[in-house]
Amino acid sequence: MTGSVIITGANGSVALYSAEHLLQAYPDFTAVFTVRDTSDSDVNTKKLREIIARFPKAKASIHKLDLASLESTQAFADTFAAGVASGQYPPIAAIVANAYYWDLVKGPELTGDGFDKTIQINHISHAALVLRLLGSFADGGRVILLSSDSHWPGKNSMEKYPPGLPTDLEELVKPPPVAEGDDLQGRGYQRYATSKLAMTAWAYALNRYLEKGGNLKTITAIAMNPGNFPDSRALTRNTPPSLQKLQKYFLRPLLPILKFTAPTLRGSAQGGFDVVELAISPKYAGEKGFYTMLAKDESSPESQDEAKQQSLWAKTLEWARITKDSTALKVAFE
Image (cartoon, rainbow, N blue to C red; front, side):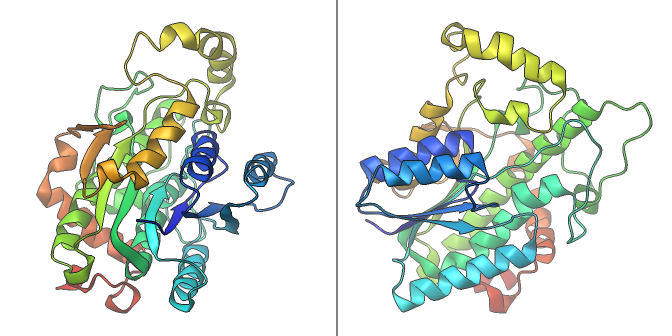
C-alpha cells in the first residue's frame, strides 16, 4: 500500500526523525508535513525543509496548520480532501497526530475557539482533522494518535496530580483558573496528561464506529506511547528553568546510561523511527488499540471505560464542530 502520510507538528523533535525515516525508507509514499509556521524564520521548519532537500526525488510538501484554531484545521482538511478528490494527492495511508502543547509555567489559557489550549491542540483539533478526512482515506489506512504513559496515573515521574476525565466534561475545555500559590508546573502537566487520556479513550470509540462504518471499516486507529525522550525540545518549551537545567546537565548527558533504567526512556530518533513503522509498515496492517513503542499494550483502566469513551465521543463531536455533513463517518450520528 502507498498513499499520503500526514504528520502534524512535523518540525518537532521526534517528528523530524519521523520525516527523515519516512522519506528514506518509504519513498513511494507522499509525505504531507504540517506545521504552525511554514517560514524559515522558524528554525525547526528550516530543519524540516533541509531534511526534505536531502531527498530530491521525494514526494513531500510542507503545509500550514494551526491546531489552536478550528478554522485553520477545517481549512486544511477541506483543501487536502479536495486535493485527494482531484488526484493532486493520493488517498491517505496514515494520519500521525503528533503535534502537542503544554504549559508548565502559566495557568490555563483559552484559544480563540474558547477552549483550553492544551486539550484543543492535543485532542479536539486532531479529532476534527481525522473525522473530516476519513472520506479521503485509502483502504487499510491508519490513524496514529500519539499518547503518553502520562495518561495512566502514577506512571510518569513528572506527575504531581493524577490525570482524570471529570464528571462534567466541560471542565476539560474550560478548566478552573489556577488558585494563588498553586503549583503551575504540576497543574500544567496534569492538563497535558489528561489530554493524552482523552486522546487515548477517544481512539477506542473511533475504532468502534469505524467497525460499523461500511467502506471505512478497514481504517484503524492506534493510540501510541512512543516513549520518553530526555533529548526532546519539549523540555525547553513552556517549562520552568529548573526543568531546563535538569535536561541540560543531567538528562541529555546521561541518556546513554539512563535508558537502561527504564524501557521507554530513549532518544527521539528511535521514537521517530517507530512512529513511521507503526503508521505504514505492512507488519502492523489492521492493528488497533494501544501500543507502547512497537508492542501491543494495555492502556489505563479509565481509558478503557466504555461509558466514559462514549460521553467523550459525543462531547468531542460538539467541540470539534463535526456534523453529519462534515464527515464520512455517518454512523457516528445514529
